[in-house]
Structure formats: structure tokens, C-alpha cells
Length: 125
Image (cartoon, rainbow, N blue to C red; front, side, top):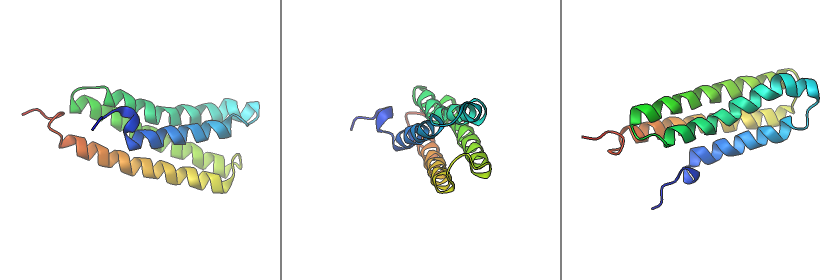
């Protein structure tokens, strides 16, 4: 089986989430884009970017650190989504959908971290 970053489900889900957030933010007015928009796009993009960075590292401990950064970016993104919802910047239903997707990514990322911690590639004997 060909193992590549692009085939990693958690990475794919993170890319979809960040693209969906981009599509919402790009339609906002200048004030909303300049304040919350830039922040939420950066944090959402950081989720998959840190997964990619970690995937490119050889040693598990080094990879794991980037996966933890990605977890932090997930939590940050969820915080920005909550602000969008409370401030009526984005549709409530869409915000709930985005929050659920972020939570799914978090669960899958935690499972991936657990899986690779047991991998012989990352823990040479």
C-alpha cells in the first residue's frame, strides 16, 4: 500500500475544513475579514499544515510535537467558530457543522497519534 500524506484521512478532513472556512470568510466585508477572518483562516490552515510538517519528520517524538500543534490549532479554530456564531457573522447551522467537523478531526488526530506511537518506524528497537 502506498502511504502518502494526501491519503491520510485526518489530513484530508483538515484540508476540507480549512477550505470550507475560506469559502465563508472570502465573502465577508473588510472589517470581518480583517479581524476574525484572518485569524480563523490562519488557525484552520494551520491544522493541516502542522499535520503535514509532522508527517514529514522521521522520529516519532518530533512528529508528535507537530501533531500537538495541530491539536492546538483545532481548539483555536473552534474558538473562532464560536465567536462567529455568537457575533452572528456566520450562519448558526453552518457554525455547528464546522464545530462538529473540527471535533471529528480532533478525535481522528488523537487516534493517529496513538497509532504512530506504537509504530516500529517511529520507535526503533
